[in-house]
Image (cartoon, rainbow, N blue to C red; front, side):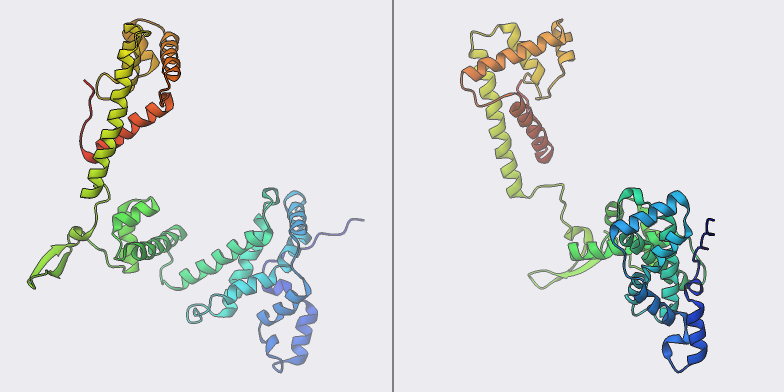
Length: 347
């Protein structure tokens, strides 16, 4: 006859056995360990050692596929020490939530993890349970800090904003702007400002006045914007290097065009197709095979054949350039045009 399945563990009192309670009545207050349910958890944690990954996955399979409460309870019992260990790491929060309550929340998180553990993903149960335990304790701490309970996603967003502001402050050596925090978190700036106000983080404006003393000893007022580097613009040395690089790339293009038109083995019409396809007849903007074919009233395949034949001829002449390198050079020129605010044309 099949035995009746165990009832699922729902609270710490479910874990404490009748023998433990009987001993508590006999010992009374002589043994501090038995003055609260938390003290009763430690012997249970020592009794049930940590499971191997394979054993935990097998228990998780039984929970999900067979609905086995016994396997679910074993997952909880074998990870009691993990829950107590995580709860003990939240030191300094005694005024907000006592240690006993933190353990209670940790056990709630552990039980939720046992209910939702997906063994098919192949993850260790302890890794999965650790996240649930921390989340349960963290939410309890957040609820204890406010008279009015806020939605969890609002609390989590506020935590993310605070962490991002701290990280950016260390990186930038100054308070982070709301726009910078919004970019880091990929959220709207208005949500960042709202969270910063709730966290009472000073909101820094680019127009904030900064008092400064110059080399002559006179005082002057500048804004914070004057002290923030514009990464989208190049300094004079970088500008000079970019222009030199762009000129060198243009020289490569000019040498290619010169070799193309001096080669008598290539027909004039094919030369025009080649030049038009790569955009060498104007602002160095390449065109598709279809667009080039429409201009010369030929098929896309014909344009591809002409371009390939010309590259074969260049290869025989020992030209240190091919299709990929030419396209890369043209793309680099376009980037340098944006940085230097100059336009290159081969007309």
